Length: 344
Ligand SMILES: [Zn+2]
Image 1: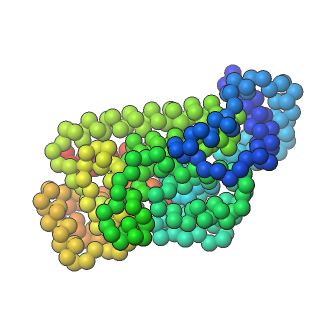
Image 2: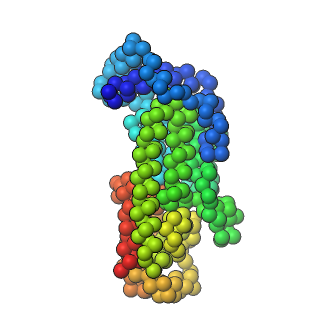
Image 3: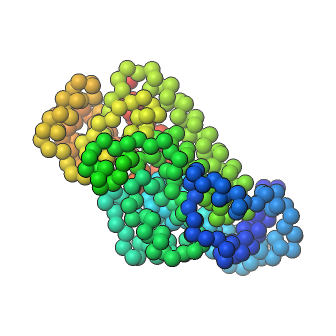
């Protein structure tokens, strides 16, 4: 039954995809403009009204080019800025989306500036998802330059209750807010909702599919949030030290405090005086683990750990693909390691 519905929906998707190309305009989706979304949506029940002829016709087309698999051409083409956005689009869109990530693996996203070839896919994409809040300063200009009238742009952090940056230089360079929204579970939930709405806007025929996938994932995030809020509430130590200050939203969720060897935007290693202050901080807060990130001075984390006789553990920022792990696996790893460091 599920399989049959899928085939019907697929046929309808193709039809809507073709007709939508000519009419959709370059527009953005976020929690602040929900009203726009209703115009593109259709009743998900409409999938049942597709005739047998239509569905078998489209199934035959698909089979001719790529037997047994959904043709890549039929998938919703989604460009994303960096890894966490790709992860979120994949869990909501699953086999209905074809995701390409603009910032290459291993590239520090805070410093990234795209070249023309990085943006080729954006000119053909149906959806562009980026985090926002100054994380991708190049994104809105890139969306403009793509001259792609069918592009639905999703600023994933829209509607999140933001945390302000305190460092003057950072505010000047990157804006007022801490962009690391995806690293807090409750703010990640908002990003999932915005992405869901964006996919539905671009591909209304699969509305119920995107809704079901996002809801299942939101339930998982919520469960993890609950579990760790209870765990962290029961420990007295609340402070941890990491590579760059990426975990403010996680800290807000869990009632914790972060300190870091680099600032929010991972720029520059600490001076001797700053390192001295970090050593003092670790001693005062009984920090026994220093977290290290691949792209934020892991050597400095090691130096600090040696100074205070702490061990070094990996923490994931999901700004790039890491260890072949999913978002949830990395989030669980981060939470369990931070918890272990505070509960010993
Ligand atoms: Zn970062």
